[in-house]
Amino acid sequence: MDRRRARQIVLELLYQRELVGDLPEDAFAARALGAHREFVEGRVCGVIERMEELDRLLAPRTRNWRYERLGVTDRNILRLGAYELLFAPEIPPEVAIDEAVELCKAFGTDPAPSFVNGILDRLWKERIAGEDVAPAED
Image (cartoon, rainbow, N blue to C red; front, top):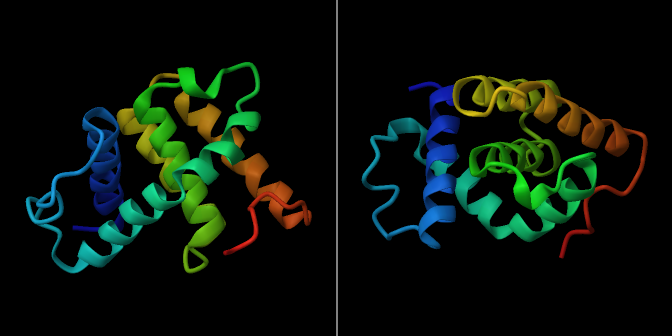
């Protein structure tokens, strides 16, 4: 398994959580994660822990779209991409954005790749321009 496949599993678990309300205790154990267990668990738990914060950051950037009306898959791809951009410094920004776009191509709606690319690119550019896009750490 590579990181791209690991991100697909993260997306599947986030999707499952959104549909059923919570992940079952064995959600991670039911997957053959191998060496990527820590990566998958860290991303899923990180996105869930910061979901409200991520949604507050992403919602105003979905120009001409109501954030809550986005498809579950597209919304979770945005969350994962934003999480990696803002809270996973070991992932280069270009990789975080590219991986989100690739997830969109595989699982999102038709306009999702360019839509997600635009939002994440804008979020990243605002951050490097010094705008306070991420709330202060607790």
